[in-house]
Length: 105
Image 1 (cartoon, one colour):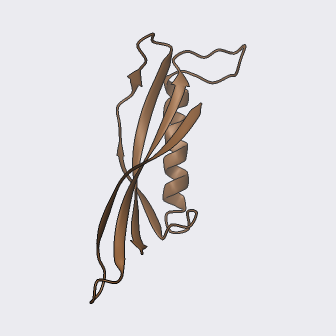
Image 2 (cartoon, rainbow, N blue to C red):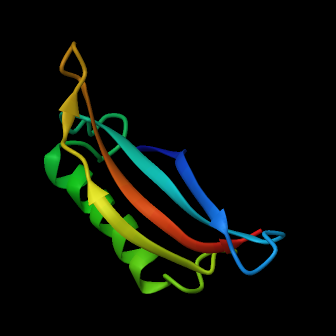
């Protein structure tokens, strides 16, 4: 599969008296692309089950390490997008949103 990460939006508000510090919540989208059908001659990956399993694995890794994931203080799943197919019906994709909370700047 191909996996992409996209910074979707950042919501920032003042944090504390004086407004010198800010706290932000960052919405990140992870997108997974996969072949519609398995092609065993190239790689044994493809189809709806493999796409769903990849999305589940990503979600579980992030949920399991929500407070220790990379350098973020807290990251949680937000939503799961629909599965869409390319116009030639060879590639499908699904996206999943995650919220990085309490980034103090």
